[in-house]
Length: 223
Image 1 (tube, helix red, strand yellow):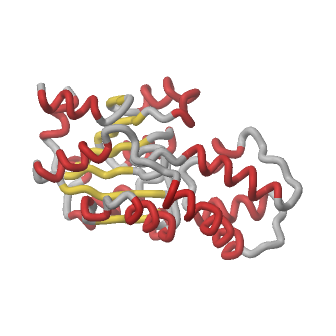
Image 2: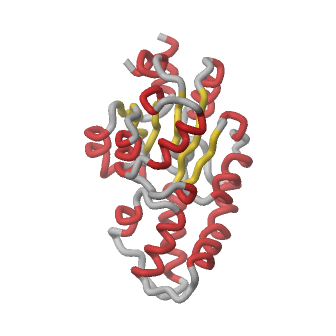
């Protein structure tokens, strides 16, 4: 089923954190460390509250919720500095991702990235993992009007790839992202991630398909 659906499509669009790279653990650690600078504890509901927000939207949320004196630019710069070395040295691709990127490239399916992350961190990931060459378009949510679950970022990537939304497949790891892809009129694969394990059933219900890793798709292609 997955093989047939994929072969009918012209473009694949990936979220980044938790979908293409195993990095969601890092962001929770950064939130804890950052708030500790202000003698604040990280609330249990924080990750769910900021799910799908762009980098800039998240900074604004932090500033308001925690009454931070730092400017939005200072908040974002702190996160960039805290994350960039981890992205370069500690964040791997999700299982089977590189082989899957090779597969879609060899089969003439164009690829793009639609991420809520900031540009500096995206560049660090693409370069450290040597995967930039696979993507014709890389768009961050800061470049569109609204973050996920609004469809803006996925529609923007499809437009820049010159592909109709109905001809696109989306890979996402959290409900807000899955909803963004569906709201854009695209076929959505939910990707398993340890960070969103407690959301597994919600993800299954929202998405068209659910995969534990990208090897499942490659096994289907070989069958």
